[in-house]
Image (cartoon, rainbow, N blue to C red; front, side, top):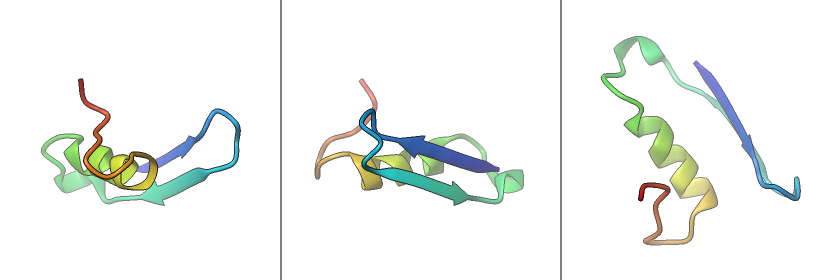
Length: 46
């Protein structure tokens, strides 16, 4: 599975691929995006 994300202004983007066959849920994807785009201690979850 491949995922991509870009900031609204286009200044920062990320594309990565992970083997999704063994994933039980989407948590690994969330952690990659949080590590790249969120400030330390901040998460995307509400």
